Length: 300
Image (tube, rainbow, N blue to C red; front, side, top):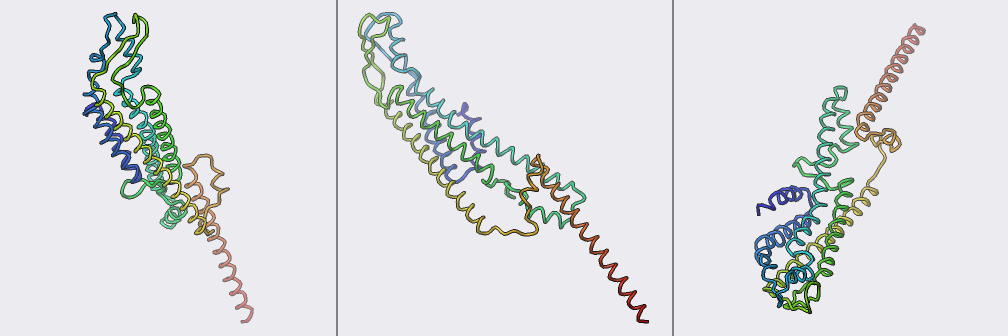
């Protein structure tokens, strides 16, 4: 498994930030596809070209007939398939790490805001739910941008899986024949070529096909699960949404171009408004006190 060590390490990190169904998908990928490919398929297909024998001595005939029967080796085809379907997972992992880094920098920036007192920090946490994606355990909450990224990577994986299944069918089908007929140049006539261990290879082909179909079904189930979960959360937010003094206006948020400047700028605005209200209250209290003193002097 040395050649697959780097990919296995990266996908293991993806497993931490995936759903339960996504973890099952990764288990199927590791055990039923990568391990079978490494331990069984490569050994069975190790003699594929040397044991592809044709009943002719014409130089080059066996090579062109083998190329006609197998445009690409099954093992190399499955390696490309695994790398292709794992690429969207790795892109999603990169997005997750970027979001975690941004939230970490945002929390450090808020801590450096000396002007914000405990009441302002409490207001920010309630209004903006800081942190939005990361949890105390180090894992992430799949919502918002991460949910969209997760759904996009699932759609890409499903499309690639279907593409490779149909590609395998159109290249050489799902069952190997014992005898292949070839009429390609430079063969002098119709040549019969024979493949070694066709039954054993067909069994492995069907096993890899079933594993690919299971992965495809798991991806579809996970996509359906995320869609249902997103709809339920959206309905719950609409039912529980109430406008409060700490609810920021959408127009105020959109006034800032940079996303990371929304929170400190909005907090500064709120603190400035609170300070003005306190000053107005102090002035009104002072005026009321002077009026009471004046009234008392008049009565005396």
